[in-house]
Image (tube, rainbow, N blue to C red; front, side, top):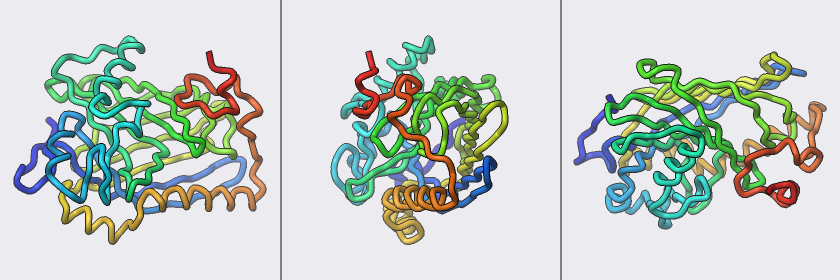
Amino acid sequence: MLPRFDRRKDLGVNSCLYQSRVAHARLAPSRHSFEYSVFYCLIDLDELQQLARNSRLFGVNRPALYSFNETDHLESSPGQLKTDVIRWLGKQDVSLPDDCRIRLLTLPRFMGYVFNPVSFYYCHDGNDNLICAVAEVGNTFGEKKLYLLPASDRTSQTAIARLPKEFYVSPFSDLDVEFEFELPAPDKSLTARVDDFANGEKVLVTSLSGQRRPLTTRDLLALTAVCPAVTAKVILLIHWQAFLLWFKGFRWFAKADRPESQTDVLNPHPSIARTRT
């Protein structure tokens, strides 16, 4: 069952925070690893109105110190994100029941700024069984791509899939790579794994782990002290690690070289937009 919390304390009932660590380890052609602290929001898309009126510190579709904007996801608009997720799943031949719940794990905006390397939608039926998950991967060009991850079975509460990447994420990763996702539904703790495979061999390991905290003003302030300017920190670290990889002599792949291998991209960059139909 999805955990329930005291309404008098939490801004939401199922929505919460996760104080987390992200770790990356490149295994080939050379080794390079790092990790950093971050915190994520888990947003129950049925609680947006409740979250919007419960705190001046956390805004929904409005400016605040921290905010969640539906327009940051799935090319959606305010009030439409859950509907748009259900519509996209329907195009993938996945039908959600009328009493479904969708929870989105994502970085919040900080003072209006956000960058999400990846967000995860967890889709449950009315009995809280995980039906599927959707990974929404983003890049620094403002593009996004969605990946459907079926639940391994209705009792495991874990979505697993290995899928062709076909998306430009890093100039140091080729397009001929597969993503392997393993996403247990978040509970008291959070774990997620996204590994890259090239020619059947694992070349990059990415993991996310965290502990649940209530979505309260107090906890937001405490996490601000631990992870100040969280989204700005993420984008700065991405560029710093890119510089280190370049300095180490890792091979560079230009985005515009293979536009035909970048498929089903949302908000395509001009370098590949001309190939979209």
